Length: 311
Image (cartoon, rainbow, N blue to C red):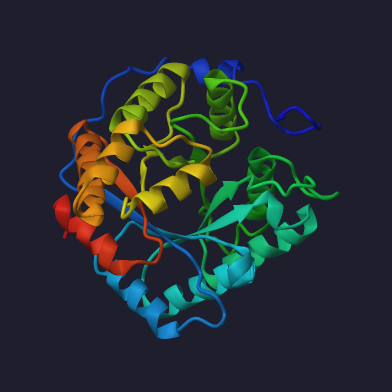
């Protein structure tokens, strides 16, 4: 499916990724755990005060950045820009905007990149996005790698406004493999291409067991991936949510996770302990940080961070 139409993708076998063979080792533990959050823009009819409370609550942790998604329910990138403007007005948080190929044509996305920079964005998470059943319309870019190139082009045009700096470019990666990939090697090939095209770091999509992430990092490093690979953590508050998120991500929920939640007297407590244990194992292995999928629930986010000792 990835080769269905012409693209700017390169082969991961290009020599550049073999220059200076990396030394493979577990990352060293750090005194401070890097921390970031994902926020979902509210619906236009939602209470603005609740979003302000969420933003203020997350800001109290002094995160390294906050990523803001886009979705149909929040009027796509209009909702993203609105939340980012609010964050810029009320806090000193650094923001990264989710930008998907499915959000518009190349020309439309070019304008949205400029609009989001106007709103205060200094970084993007470049995504392909979920394909509609009818496929992408004409004029839409087919790959996140094409989107990376577009962001770089706009960045060059906006160089004076960025004061000689650059936009932070992040991408997605998949410890359990992308559901559309031919095989795991293909996933690594795509990640290496994103690295070569300018990605500064990658945030993982959903996974349920620490070993999945740790093994993914080790194999990726052996393949030549040098950018930071940041584990995305979703608090497991219920079996229903876990199953739903697994379905949306094209992942099967591990039997051990299902069994623990099914047999628990307190489903929430069992799920949160599973999540905390997952994060502790990753951090104990030397991983430098976490990206928390908040689902806009400040109480659950605080509970999770309390359990792993982040204040």
